[in-house]
Image 1 (spheres, rainbow, N blue to C red):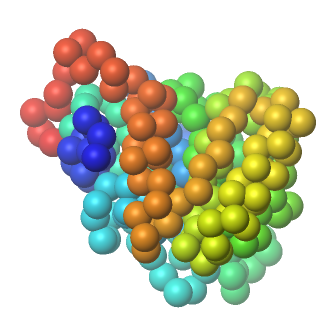
Image 2 (image 1 turned 60 degrees about the vertical axis):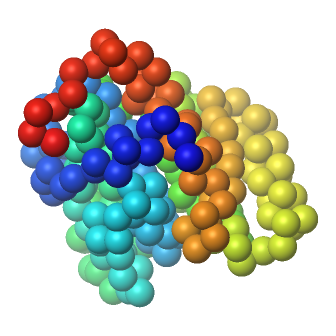
Length: 214
């Protein structure tokens, strides 16, 4: 348990956007979740918020095809679910459109405080992950790597993988952190909520208006 659990559990759908101009007003603070389409990104969001159907999940990778925006009961604080990288069975032309819109969001969204980069702990640091880390370094963006499905590995190999990813991030010069996470076992939920509370500036709650509509 953390002092911020109820805030994350207040998450509610605001809108879906095809492109940056359709996103909510660029004010306040938001955190974006990015990752390969089969890394468990939507499931991690649902676990974070203790809601089964907040973010759409599917056995078919690539179902998140829009920028999905979720509000919290703290004014102008948001969670963003970005399109999964992979987009199974989608025409290449459509993939390029989605990728262009996602890049526009990452490069130009002023309220973006950090990116949670979701990786399957069994298959970390794939091409898209490397691209995201390079982008983060170039743009001075904070990254928190979420190594999902940690229940699939024994404790020793899971820790070794986490340390290897930490070393890679350090060597790249990225302002980042790494943790293991399992929606099934509950591993790392409190750590994730604590990290996001720092980025979303929940420490001084008495100075942040509570939304009456949440």
